[in-house]
Length: 169
Image (tube, rainbow, N blue to C red; front, side, top):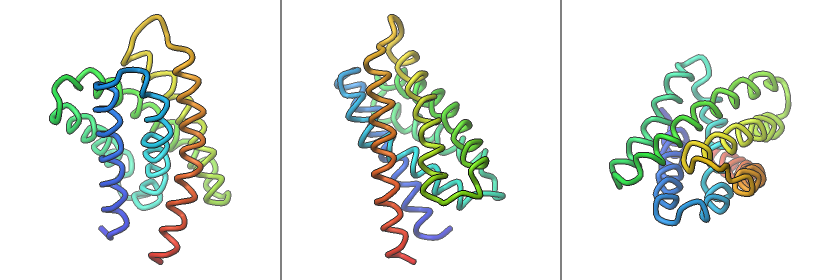
């Protein structure tokens, strides 16, 4: 495994753990900022990992990575177990949707594949995570805010990661 893949895995895990622990500490009020900073990074990183793991165990590796982020979140703070479980379920569903759309867009420019699939995964995650983590009544403003923050954050992170990849290459 090359240095870029290791860095992407570390970034992914750090972002999801930070997001989960911040939600446990601050509740739903931090969700939109988390979505912009950390979840936008995760959904964009997932696409870079998709490229590296395609035809090399993509599905099981992503499932292990998502589960690892949730397990580590709970290990750092047992109070995060409920949030980590919600995160795992939402990210697993969003990851599946992301992979399907990324594959459908496989012949398009990389920036379009990344951000096109990010829109779908952001929608899935923004619907599922708040419902699973915070219950009912649904926090519609949080769901909408998260969606837009994830899409914008994902776009910005796609530009940053592309620039880093070009420097490394």
